[in-house]
Amino acid sequence: RNMMPHPAHLPTDAASAGLSKDRETSTIPKSDEAGNWVYPSPQQFYQALLRKNKEPDAEAMDSVVFVHNVTNERTWSHILDWERLHERECPTPSLLRFVGRPHDLSWGAWWSTRLSYRGAPFDRHDWFVDRCGRKVVRYVIDYYDDPRSGESGGLDITVEARPALDS
Image (tube, rainbow, N blue to C red; front, side, top):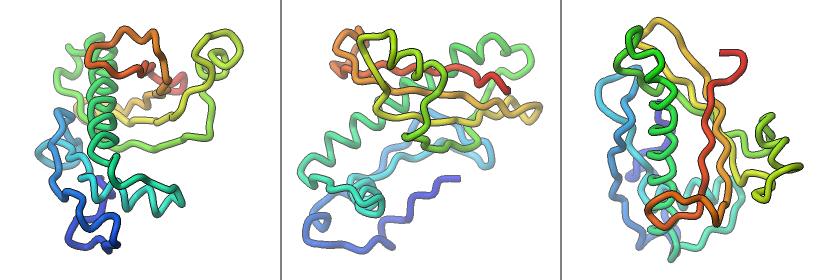
């Protein structure tokens, strides 16, 4: 379930008052209802960062939301690469939920901190993918700042997504 509050219910302050409330629909299908997940607006993203005791730059929110959305689309693409191995069982996987775990190192991130030029990831998520109601699979996703990423779009971010060992 999308936990972002509706823009009309957000408190506004001087910095966020001018931020867009427009939201973009992702390509990621929802598991528990029709349609796709909807990304937060710049104003919602700004307010979420404030709730997490961050100091967001209101002027950068359009760029921050762009990077967030592109990175999530890349994540889904990586998950679908894994899910293609099971497409006979489930041709249309969907995202049930996700959890941010920025302070928890996965085993892959642990190794990266010791052996890779990338070091530690800047974020980690667990995404729970519904295989057509037959099975829920947890994916571990590590996000790295990576000037050698080679990804298109000009973002120096590498996304590593893999099924969790317990899935």
